[in-house]
Length: 192
Image (cartoon, rainbow, N blue to C red; front, side, top):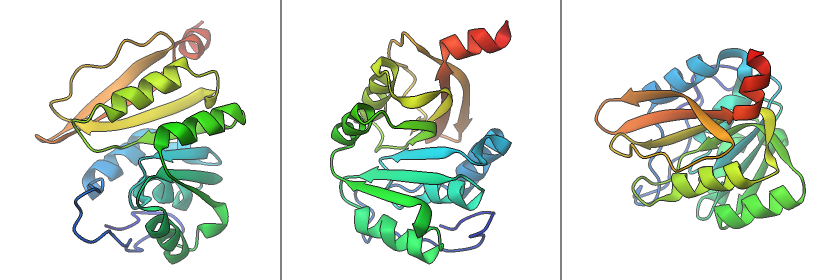
C-alpha cells in the first residue's frame, strides 16, 4: 500500500501483521475516491474514522489537506509511524480508543471537519452507526462537508437519515462500495 500522489507520492505505508483487524483500502478504490473528490481535498480539515493504517487521511494530507485527525482503537502507533514515514506528522493528531467516544468528545469540543472518511470492518453495523451519529450531531461535519463511507458491496441498506443525504454511490467489484454524503440543507441552499 502506497501514497498515490502529492508530497508523499510513492511512499509505502506499514501495515499491521496478520491483518485480522485491518482491511486497507485497495489502491484502485483509493485512486477512484480521490479522483471523485478532486480539488475538494485542498486546505481541508480531515477526520479519518476507523483509520487502520492511516491510508486515506495520509493520502488527503499528501494532496494538500491542512490537517487530519485519525481515530482507531488498535492502530494508533502504526498511524503515527506512517505519518513520520510520509513526513506529514506535523499535521496529524491521533486518538487511540473507541471511535464513538472520540466522536462525542470532538463534537463536545465543537471540532468541525470538511472531509470525513469512515472505513470500518464490514458487516458489523459500524458504518451505519457512525453515519447516524454524524446525522444526529450538531458538530463534527462542516455545513459544506463531505462524508465518504467505505462499506461492503452487499451492504445496501442506508440507515434512516434526517439531515444527511447520499449524493453518490460507486461499486468496486464484488467486495466494496463507496457512498458520499452531504448535508441536505446545504445542498438545497446551493441549488437555489
